[in-house]
Amino acid sequence: MPALSVENSSHSENLHEACEAIKRVSLFSLLAPEVVETLAEASERRFFSKGETIFTMNQYDGADVYCIVDGKAKLTTVTQDADALSVEELAPGDIFGIEFVLGSFTENVLQASLTAVSSLSLLTIDSVSILELVKRKPIVARALLSGFARNILQLKTGPNSRELDPQKRLYRTLFDIVERDDTQIPSRWRIPKMPKHRDLGENAGTTEIEAAEAVARLISEGIAKREYPGLLILNYSAFHSLAL
Image 1 (cartoon, rainbow, N blue to C red):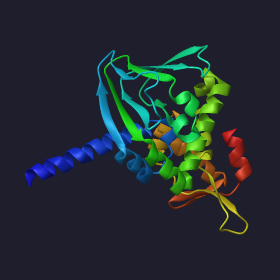
Image 2: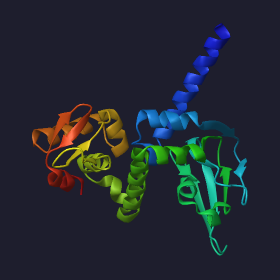
Image 3: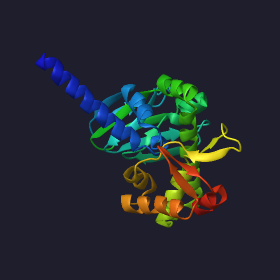
Image 4: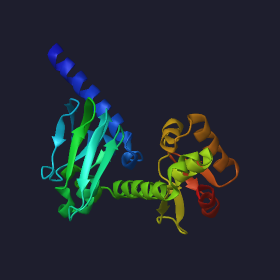
């Protein structure tokens, strides 16, 4: 009996660590806790020493998505015609493979290698589980699309995008999870489930206090109102302006 208790405790601890690692990935940061846990259940923690190869060219088949937990890795990719080589350093919170899983870019899947630059810990998430979640839960697809949109926006705005006003970053983060509710006539816009101020602040690169102040402003100015467990948007145009 004690052995079973230790085993259960270890599983719970590993699951928690996997959930925390997945939440640090920007594409997954807005997923509901139960979805994150499902991904964590489908993941495997792996460890590598400095200089060790995770996979070489022609080895990666798109069966797994890789999330960096601790340490750094070097990702080398080759263009389809093999004319150019690209080298990128991956750090905790970075992800590799999701583009191949969702986009089925089979012509590029085999043209990548991953090597540990330091002692490395990563999660591999089964691609079948990710695709099943996308099919069964539209909110997962929406969260991933929002994540891709944020990445595109960061590429357009450049390295100084993090220097934007903290409240604007918070409103952009909230705007990513707004959904249209067509069950009402007229239809309304709402955030079905508000993230905790701490999580909201982390996702926007600000503090918990700034997150609380930003939400309070929405309510005090009549732009939104609390509707547990979410937020009802009363003035969509004003909200959209704050996020621009």
